[in-house]
Length: 111
Image (cartoon, rainbow, N blue to C red; front, top):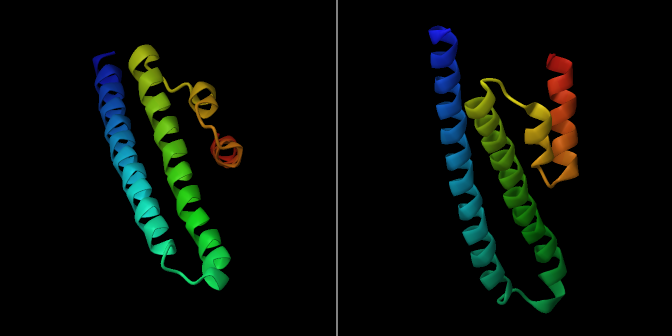
């Protein structure tokens, strides 16, 4: 039992560390999005729509990182409380349906 507890504690710490790093990455994406938005003001009007579409990709990246952050935090939380990951609850924390669906599909294949 001690071995299982030690392994669980180690995995919880790992998941918490990953979640924290992903959160930092999401904040950095937000700063990048803001900086690129400021640069957009200097783009000629005829090219703005194309540039705006690319800027949207930065926003999508930030949302994707946040989704993975929330999922990882949910796994860590359930493991700390129950000793095992509650994948369904962790997946429900993801607000981007496409990300949750891909993760669920991948996890179902691995099971």
